[in-house]
Amino acid sequence: MKELSLNILDIAQNSVTARSTLIRIDLEETNETLRITVSDNGCGMSKEMVENVTSPFTTSRTTRKVGLGIPLFMMAAEQTGGNLTITSKSEKDYPDDHGTVTSALFYKNHLDFTPLGDIINTIVTLIQGMGEIDLIFTHKSDTLDVLLDTREIRETLGGDIPLSVPDVLVWITEFLKEKYNIS
Amino acid sequence: MKSLAELSAIRDKMKDKVSLREGSNETRIVVGMATCGIAAGARPVLNAFVEAVAKEGLSDTVTVLQTGCIGICQYEPVVEVYKAGEEKVTYVHMSEDKVQKVIEQHIKGGKPVAEYTMK
Ligand SMILES: Nc1ncnc2c1ncn2[C@@H]1O[C@H](COP(=O)(O)OP(=O)(O)O)[C@@H](O)[C@H]1O
Ligand SMILES: [Mg+2]
Image 1 (cartoon, rainbow over the protein chains, first blue to last red):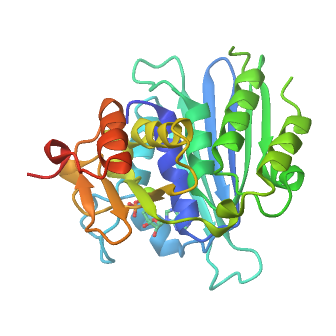
Image 2: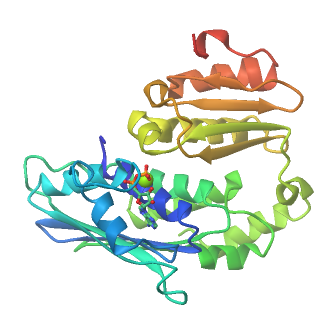
Image 3: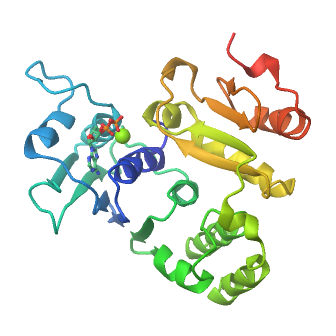
């Protein structure tokens, strides 16, 4: 992918597919590193499944064919000297406390670091397509402290206006641009 | 400063629009947003459709939706258009700059853009 924000969109779609009701996307930056964490309360994965999705090219694979979203994100992290970890609790084993945390560490000064790109666009695209699901988004660095919580937005909008209404998406875009000091 | 008060204003403006809640489905524009689609450039295509529908004031009858893998990854970005009572039209290798023509000619004018469909 050309931008890490596209990987983030793709990884967050996994959380949508996993029937989550709340998704978190957290970005934390230091001078040298960027950590991207996507967490959800969806159906989760078994231990075996987690091993499988993070090693798509191993010949020992026995379960059904899986996609390329996680491997691509993992590659983007590893090629900077970073890594990707997934911890997951499946709904079957943890009926009251299930979900998945996918976290990737990037070294920003590495030659093969992919730029973050248009993260605002990713957040707004995700909100456009996620229906009733809620999203918490944070981005923290020395100079940034961005927080968006769609639960607050829904509360203000009242019960029956979906977040996918164009006016609302424009408001969210403008809100985030302000937080990023983009005019 | 963007304020929640502005959101309240949006709420008040929208309050009476029944169509929002009912989710009018006369026309559905469905964009493939799986890994293959996103990698091929589906995000700007989706956003161009969302913006065009809003700008042209089509929100009452046209819904823009996201879906997973449509199964023809080599043709991504793929966009399917469903109009009530008509056969589905599949646009392939979509890009931002093709969106306006689809909106004008097909969504508004009722004539699919043949050159953007699968050969
Ligand atoms: N957040 C998640 N919750 C539950 N299952 C997940 C999650 N993320 C990934 N998976 C599982 O891992 C598989 C592989 O994910 P991915 O590499 O993104 O490919 P794809 O989404 O195309 O299948 C998914 O099909 C899904 O079964
Ligand atoms: Mg995926």
